[in-house]
Amino acid sequence: MTREHVDVLIVGAGISGIGAACRLQERCPSKTFAIVEARGAIGGTWDLFRFPGIRSDSDMFTLSYPFRPWRGSQAIADGSSIRDYVQETARAYGVEERIRFHHRVVNAEWSSPESRWNVELERSDTGETLEISCRFLFSCTGYYRYDEGYTPEFEGIEGFGGRVVHPQFWTDDIDYRGKRIVVIGSGATAVTLIPALAERAAHVTMLQRSPSYIISLPAVDPLARVVARILPTRLAYPLVRWKNVLLALALYGFSRRRPAEMRRLIRKLSERRLPPGYDFDTHFKPSYEPWDQRMCIVPDGDIFDAISAGRVSVVTDRIDRFTETGIALESGSTLEADMVVTATGLELLPFGGISLGVDGEEIDVGQAFTYRGMMLSGVPNMAYSFGYANQSWTLGSDLTAREICTILSHMDRYGHTRCMPRVPDPEVAPSQFIDLSSGYVRRAIDRFPKQGSRDPWRREQSYTQNRRAFRRQPIDDPALEFSRGRVPAPNAAPRPRRPAPPRSGRDDLSAVPSP
Ligand SMILES: Cc1cc2nc3c(=O)[nH]c(=O)nc-3n(C[C@H](O)[C@H](O)[C@H](O)COP(=O)(O)OP(=O)(O)OC[C@H]3O[C@@H](n4cnc5c(N)ncnc54)[C@H](O)[C@@H]3O)c2cc1C
Image 1 (cartoon, protein in one colour):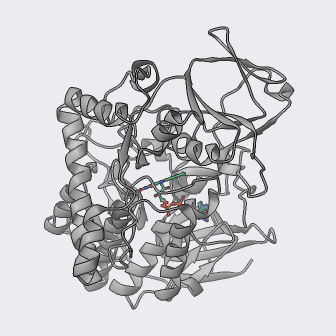
Image 2 (spheres, helix red, strand yellow):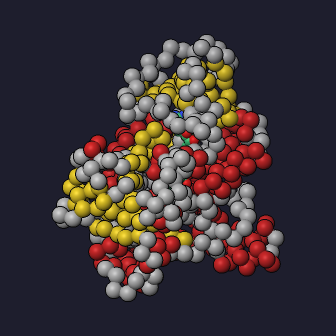
Image 3 (cartoon, protein in one colour):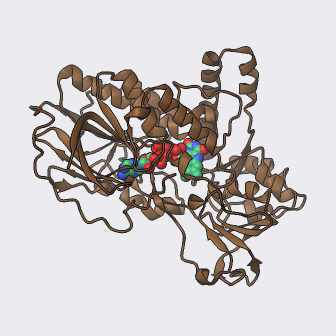
């Protein structure tokens, strides 16, 4: 077993991991670091998903990094442009050469006597096992499984004569031209995929159990178009970025405070794009309030236009079973199909399935509290990157990366070797980590850490509020325990480790697809 040591080990080369590496290099230049990535490419989500029409559904001025402006006025970008942007950032900032591809972290064990993490990795290309130790572990592993999407059990699916595809596993060779396609689902993926499929398919049916809120935004940012002509990028970009931060927060705040008015507004914006007399209540009126679940954003109302053009129809019903030629519905009607796309969601997974331990004790992540949405109570020298559900992910992940750099610099300044959120006192009431009622959240939320009822054991869904808190709150927060310990030489023999738990099939990421 080979072993090396770095100051910081970043796990994941998606938008968060690359951003964290750039920040580390910028703000803590003396730190040694490596990025370990299970797949063979940079980009995470934006490299994995290849279905037709894949694009951002939050604006690129806030999904891009604040230190590397998104150029142009296109607010909604396609998946490959986002992947290119992340790859080019890694290259431009010199972090690309720090990435070890095909290195999947399976186990990480904190050793207090050694003041370090002993991290066990598997090479997904050669099967080799290796170990790296680090002073600080930074998990930038996203929030869902890569090897599996969520598909409910459908009776008779194996007897269906056409093809069934989950969008997470779409490949370029899938031919859907001239086909009758049923897309099961009404979430962000379904509404993104459907207009793109409709361009070539004979017809696309969106089959949903219940509707979601769909809001149309301009694909090209009107302010960005104007300011790009009159201002240099260094001024235009922050201006548009801040406009979008504040607009997204205002819309979210308005939805939570005045849901009835927000519902009316969404209805007005959608109905005018649909054919006269369209049954809006059945197909587009959800039973929950705006932002109880993630809102679907569509550029220039493309899905409504496809419905108006007759290329897409919406059916709100429940699946009884698959037949050889399509889907039988509980209402008694049937949908004939050549192909079915199961846009039924993701399988959430915290920390890329890494098994974590502290001094021989396995950590039950579901019992830990989140410290300001970036560290875990009782777990030393470890952070994780998690973005927002109601705004662009990167706003949250970049804030976390900057805060972690501040903590690392503080530790260096005072000679601390350990930084650990304490366990909150019992009067801190637990609440759900992700404040959404969607099925994919409910199915897995007990595997994620808890939020507390008060600061610093929670992170509000507000970039401006968190940014203010990060700037004002002292680093030596009483909830954060800093301590010094003798640091043995990095290459001292490792102490015996907690044996890695047997990996169940569900957590096994060995099928992680690579390009
Ligand atoms: C279809 C889709 C569309 C989306 N659209 C938007 C949007 O428009 N706006 C928005 O803000 N958010 C969106 N999201 C959320 C999106 O996931 C985030 O925007 C962002 O890409 C997350 O980046 P990340 O780097 O944190 O995680 P990921 O993109 O998931 O990357 C994590 C990386 O970590 C690696 N990894 C995981 N586990 C391990 C391990 N154990 N060892 C080594 N490596 C590991 C993975 O291989 C991957 O490369 C979307 C998500 C999906 C699925």
